[in-house]
Structures are given as structure tokens and as C-alpha cells.
Image (tube, helix red, strand yellow):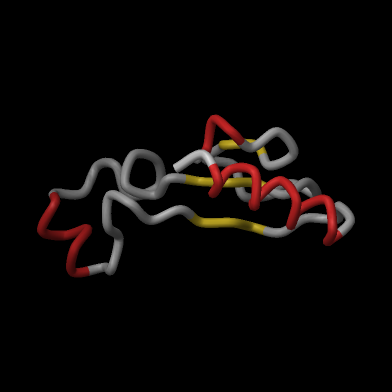
Length: 70
């Protein structure tokens, strides 16, 4: 899904004006044990989207494209 998105960028940096897509299990919570991640509600299939300043329709189209790939 992540590789099919073109507008959303995968990153661990959440302090940007562009929309970012993050996989917490391998980035922000990557040093936790699987048990600690589970207790925090962070599953392997969780993606975090931090919405930036792009047009909503562009983000919707990119997410639709990404989701269609799975």
C-alpha cells in the first residue's frame, strides 16, 4: 500500500507541512518488544497518516490508489 502512494511520503518525521505516512511498528515504536507494541495498540499493519497542507481530493486519490494495490 505504502509503495503505491505517490503524494504521501513514508517517513518517521512528523514535523512537516506535507502529508506523511508512517509505519509505527518499524519506526517510532520499532525499539519496543512486540508485547509492548501490542499494549500500546501498535500492530504490524497499522499506518499513521499525518495530514499536511495538500488538497484533500489529491490525498483521497492517492490513498485510494494505495489501498487498491493491496
